[in-house]
Image (cartoon, rainbow, N blue to C red; front, side, top):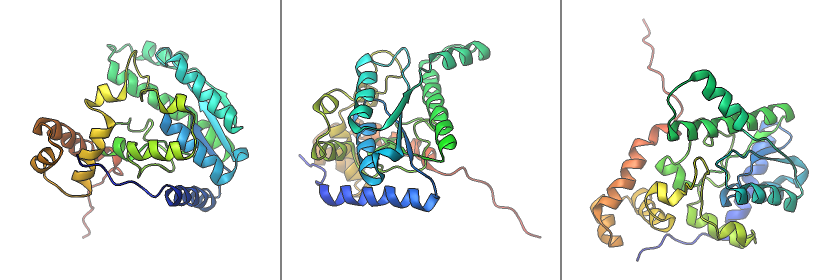
Length: 262
């Protein structure tokens, strides 16, 4: 079955390091703030940031809520300590509950999950502004393409160092950098509600998702061709491509109509 091409790990790493260095230099900022979820994406981004500009210029924040798996919060702190970066923890339930109390809207899992992501990014940007740091995003290509992120939440950042890596690439590069296996081996999850996992929410494994996205976005294959190539139901392909098309707006700068000159 078709696999996505393997990346040159050493060159990819060095290109990302140079990218991070250039972004910090061009912006005349003093470092990077990164939210540490305890997952593989933020861990990889933190490892790369530290190697690019030095651990003394990287600040990590863990932001647990009542639905955050204890293991993920522990891992976020452990990664900060392993890297030797300055870090803090801000529990977000107080902010979340105050917001929900003031709005008095009917509770909705998706809306609350997105609100959590936006509260976290507000906290990250506050620290970034106070320190004259840039915000490091942790999104990967797979999730960006299908819109599996919160607009103005985890999708808000000043740079996306791993944004061109499929999730499969993220695992490969993480193994190459010797990221701990307790991070690599657990299921990807955002912890936005109880027992949530990324693959359950997406509707398939990241391995299959990446192969569909590769054939669609890089090989320009039609849905039926992809289904035949991967020997999977056309409905699975349609589901993913529909996500891609419907979420395109999430990665675009807000548009304005053109003015008319007299």
